[in-house]
Length: 235
Image (cartoon, rainbow, N blue to C red; front, side, top):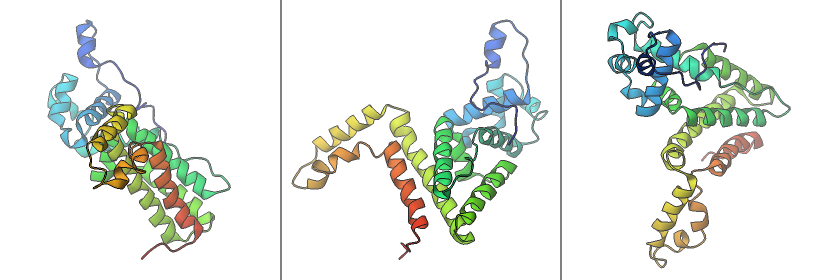
């Protein structure tokens, strides 16, 4: 979806511009960029028009000259974040196309935690959401899946990816993966080996990696491959 807004950009804040003696300029891009920054730092539920106005150094009513209400602001945020999330080109195996899409989604969501909040807590109806869904369902249908199976697989993969990102963010992105692994090592070292023979034995080498690329790939591939195999894994 075309947009001239770069969600990854970090423009100079209004307060910095004022300290440097330059006149304040407020545009819809500036408003949305600051809203994304605020939502990424403090969570989407903490984003309010008065708080955003304070961050921008303007009165609350000034913002309503750019967006009609908070929902319109959220739509602008979603549009900006989805602008950098492209559906992979078609290939000879729908599994690879769908898998690559959710890898890209995870990367975008780890860079902007507000993206998972938008989807988990909000009702997003921007065109890009429907464009992505239509394209990927079509790829799965072309690859031989029935319509219901394609829908179920897409949303199973989406929910898995959102959950993985929310799990990973505080463990191996707010701190280093090495620190996280060391925390596991210290926790396991305090356990009684007789009471927890698996945790202190063969499982110990893997527990420090349960928030990682490897963990994400392991889970995502099993969701996709289970459907692609044609096996009925339901109870």
